Length: 271
Ligand code: MLT
Image 1 (cartoon, protein in one colour):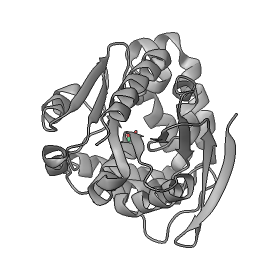
Image 2: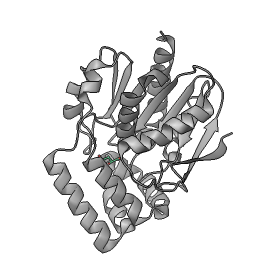
Image 3: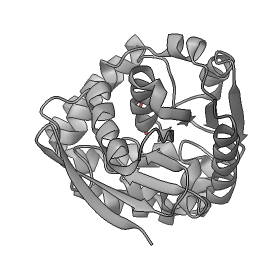
Image 4: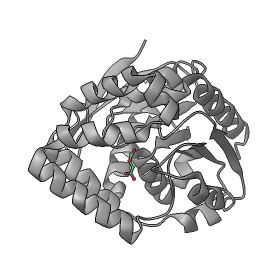
């Protein structure tokens, strides 16, 4: 059973949940989704203390005065400090935008980690094309509102077969997205446009790194991520064959199994 908690970071209220006991595992959600996106996968992690934040601006957590991937990572640090004792280290896994935050955290606080993972995420900064697309997205949100934006955007995250056979997954995510305000969505887009390229971190880290990709992901394409997955000294690489960008929904059991395997590996890799 998950316990709901909150703390204050940079004068913002930040919510998160905690369940179970054992090595702490932090699951960071992506853009346009809440911590609840991890519910199904978290069920496979009953041997661990699973911490699921609501990033500032999402799910009842206030926006920070200035949102960057680094400032969001600062909020995670405070949660981790509140939930760990002594020299206890954590495993940090982030979905998409949550992966960008994970990388910012790993760059700033590697000593707090046993390993980290990119779930449908990338260490590269936005390309100039992506920045243009995001600018159009921001204009769309300003003219039509965040709900209309997410209603158009969220279905593109799923594999064609998922859309065909499980429209209820998308409907659920669109329903959950009603809780977003337009400002948070714009702030996240700007923060993603400005984020640092972290491929150098992948080259130098001695922590194990998970790369979990979706065969049909149109947002974070496997052809772009496979070259990154060769950069760390210790990578754990898996492709979800039936998934787009949302493996924790589209292949929940397989995602849970892979996370569990990586965590167990990273946990045994303590130095
Ligand atoms: C996400 O799922 O967090 C976003 O689609 C990531 C992105 O737009 O780069």
